[in-house]
Amino acid sequence: MQVHPVLIAGQWRESAAQGTFQAEDPAEQRTIDDLYPMSSWADADAALAAAAAAADEMRLLEPARIAAFLEAYAARIEARKSELVEMANRETALPKSPRLADNELPRTSNQLRLAAAAAREGSWALPTIDTNLDIRSLHAAIGPVCIFGPNNFPLAFNAISGGDFAAAVAAGNPVIALGHPCHPNTTRLLAEEASAAACQTGMPAAAVQLLYRLSYADGERLVADPRIAAVAYTGGRASGLKLKTCADRVGKPIYLELSSINPVVILPGALAERSAKIADEFTTSCLSGTGQFCTNPGFLLLLRGPLTDAFITAVVERFRSAPVGTLLSRGVCESLARGVASLRSAGAELLVGDADGGGRGYSRSNTLLRATGDAFLRSPADMQSEAFGNASLIVVADDIAQAARVLRHFEGNLTGTIYSESRGGEETEYAAIAAQLRPRVGRLLDDKMPTGVAVSTAMNHGGPYPATGHPGFTSVGIPASLRRFSMLQCFDNVRQSRLPAALRDRNPGGGTWRLVDGQWTTGDVKPRNS
Image (cartoon, rainbow, N blue to C red; front, side):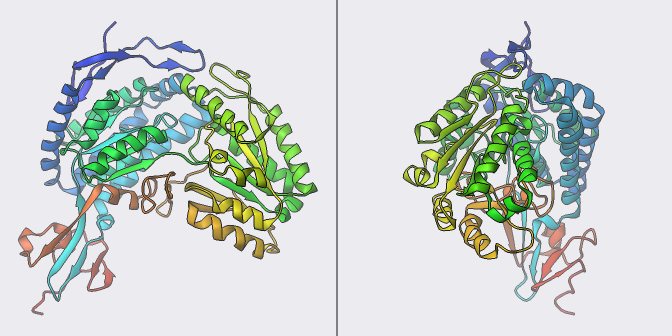
C-alpha cells in the first residue's frame, strides 16, 4: 500500500518516514486503508529550511498578494465541498449536515476571507506615528509559524485551514502545519487546495507546508528550533505543556488552547421563570457534537432548593432519553471514561450514564453527575477534571456565598455563563457570582449557553490558564488574532522611501486606520515642515 507524500517547499514528495499510521472510522470502528508517514527529523529540517527562505520572500510581498491567496483558497475549498465533507464525516463521525456542510465548512471559507480583508486593509497592524519625534511603529510578520491542529474541528480549526492558519498567513508568515492523526485524509485534501491556491496566486513555494505526524521528541525539537518564530497548539493539556516548556526555554511565543469545563451558573429566579427552557438549552449544549466542543458546558452550579431538585430531575430525563452520539476516536472514548471516573473518585454521585456504548461506534452513554458544594470545596482540583465528551457535573451549593466560594477555586476557562431572572430581581446575586467568574473566563455570557463561537471582530476565544497559555490573546476574532503572529517593529528617523508603506506620510490604501500623534485617522500625515 502506497504511503501518502508530505508537502515540502511546494512539492508533494516522499517522506523520510520512520513509520506509518492510519486513521480510523470511529462510527464503524474500522481502520481506513490510506497510509500516512510519521516523518523523521529529515522532513522537519527540510520544511524548516524552506520556511525560513519563504519568510524572507513574504516580507517583501504586498498585502494584496497574501489576501488574494487566502481568497483563492477559500474558493477552492468551497469548490471541493462535497469531497471534504464526505471525508471529514468518515474520519470524525461528525454529521455531514448541518454540522460539516452547513456550518463548519462555510465558517472555514468565511474566516479565510475575513483574514484576507484584514491583510488588505492593514489596520490590524496598528500603525502608529509620532511626527514630533519622527518615530513610527507597526506590527509585522514574525516569521515561520508551526501550527498543531485539534481533532474536534477537522475544517475550521485544521492546522492548514483553520483560524490559526488564516491569522498566521494574513500577518505575512509561512506556515508549517502538523496534521492531526485522527483526520489525515481531510487534511491532505485541504493541503492540496492550499498548495494549488499558492501556485495560482504566485505565493512563495513554501508558504504552506504539511507534515502529518512527528514523534513527540521531534515535535518538541521542531518547536524549539530557531527557524520557527511562533507556535500555535490546540489539544490536550499534557502535550501542550510539554511543547510550551520547549518554547519557553528558548523564549519563543506559543499560543495554546488546552482545556476548559466552561461553568454555567443558574440562579433560582431563572429556574422559577423558565426551568424547562433552560433544561432544554443545557441538554442541547452539553450533547451537541457528542459534547466535543471546546466550549461544552461541563460544570453546572445551582443553589439548593426544590426548584433545583425539579430541574435536575428534568435534565436527567433529557440525558437519558437523548440519542447517544459517536465520539471522535477510541482515545476520546477512553479519555472520557477516565474523566468521569476521576469525578466519581472525588466524590461526585452518578445520576445517569457512565456506561460503554449506547451509540454507533465509539460511544459512551450520556452522563450526568452531582456533587454538593461541600464536596467540591474538599477537592476543588479533582472536581474540575475535564470529561471531554457527552458528560457534565452538577454542583449544588448551599447558598450564594458558598457558590461564590466554589467559583473562587476555579482554574481559567474559555467561557462562563450566568442565568438569572429576566426582570432584574437578582442583581445582588448576579454581582456576587460575576465578581468571581469574570476574572476566570475569557468570555462571559448571560442567559445563553456557551457552545457557539461566532467569528466576530469582538470575539474572545481565549482565557486564563489552562484554557489557554496566555490570557491576552484570542484564537477567534479577526483582526486581533493576527497580532499573535507578529512582532512590533519600530522605525526611528527612517527615511520615507525606506519605511513600510503603512508608515509613510501618505496612507497607502486610503482606508488604513493609523494612530497619528494620538489620534486615529485614515488621512495622510502632514509633512513635518508644513
